[in-house]
Length: 288
Image (cartoon, rainbow, N blue to C red; front, side):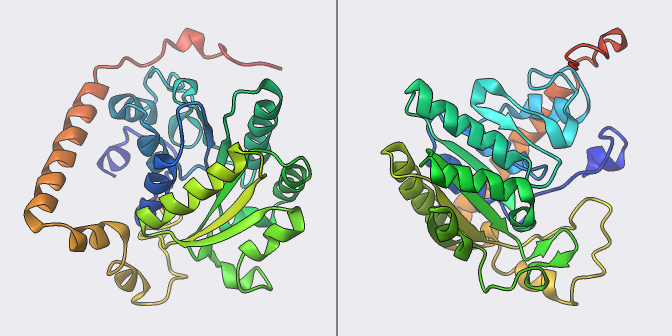
């Protein structure tokens, strides 16, 4: 958040603090040939997919990165070289795009699958319904991971649906269904591996509901007045990194923390050497 507070990153940011186990587990189940589409809360997904940290930092600062040349910023960057179709700031809009990648795979014989990550609120969007219906009808190699973090932006998901779970909708579309602990990277990997195997073998799409919790606001300036007192403190006791620390040796955990801090510092320093785009190119890559 130092880059944001210091003005190096412009615009709002949507962090995935507390949700890290979902992208880590899911990306471990994917192959290089597979396509990935995520939401504007996609930085964790980008890192798990292997996008270079220094280029990611450069993109967030609006510098001429190898990702989107500084034009994507925090909510829109992509990397075709990593099969990362990108983020999308329109709720649910990534679903039909990722579904299109799955449809292409069905025609080109590549054997690839397409995975899209969405928030719980996206399941109430019309474009999402249309895409899921098409995916089920055509038995596409498609996996949809719903990151259910309790809130649809600032509204509790329980106030927005009449069912106990989101995944209950899957049979309507002819999709397989799974519910998983989204704070357990191993459990997520197992669920996604099964879904990917089904999709790649012609068994059709899967809808996975991964339960997790945000440790921060919906966006960086969110005061979170809507959250009950003590909710975040409670979530901090079971978030993915706390659970990982409890499962490994303390010395190993400390070493990993130090390695990560060093890697981040080096990547951030390297990102400042990336120049800003030439203002005269502002109209490049625009199509009508």
